[in-house]
Length: 119
Length: 227
Image (cartoon, rainbow over all chains, first blue to last red; front, side, top):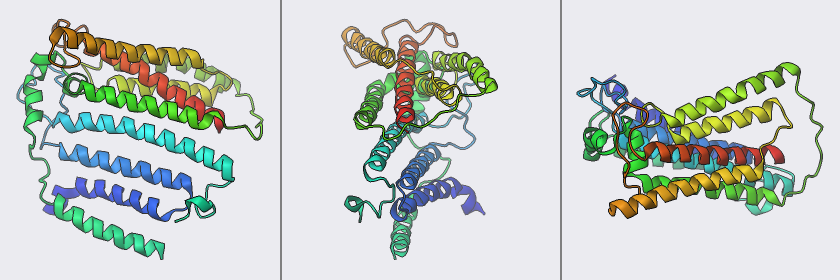
């Protein structure tokens, strides 16, 4: 019980990462591969945020005057994840536009039928 | 076969990661730099939102790189989709009256909310990236709800370039005045918890909000146009 309580966020985050990697390795539809990439991205973001958590900490925002001694979570992973989310959006948009281009060229999104993409 | 190989590979990777992660205690304070930002951040930057002061002030150069990545991705999307020829013309039904009126009613409200989010980025949760994403979602609403309304491409490019220029110029002025690092906070810090505080942080975040909003709206415009 204590183990689950301590590591549930790590398990969840890496669960998402492994689901993403599995989708990327196994699925044949390009859109599904891109969805797997996005799930992997989410898992990594969740892992970074859960590393920065401090027990009973609040968000690092001094929204009230008398918040001097309240424990706060680490702001650095949150700032890094803000960066990572924006970059994830950029990667997703670029990947989707490449998928549109591939579909117009080959007429299919199945990676098995595109000869140059087979592995 | 492929499935089994993938599962074995994932199991090996999972074992390795579990052996590393089990030594990271959950909920324990770890970094000294985070505590430094929490203790000194309000005096040094004047912002009550510590994440904002890290993103815009302490790691402002990093944020410039991030905005550049988004810009390059927007250019990449338009370059990949630019030479595509339309094979077939789809018939688009005009939206019903309720949908049309509802989205015309909601559009300025969503824009207003996005502007609120990025103007108050140094006081409350939120900031330029979040506000920009909300503004882009307002444009997505018009594309889904009342088709036929398009954003002007030249104006969105102009907004994007001007706001990027404001970011770089404010950073360079800080470099010239402070002489230590990019994005030196040269304006007066003001009173904590008030809107006009934190020096250059609101200016930078407003610029980032406009830039991210116009870039994501441009990406949505390209993807809607080609799909």
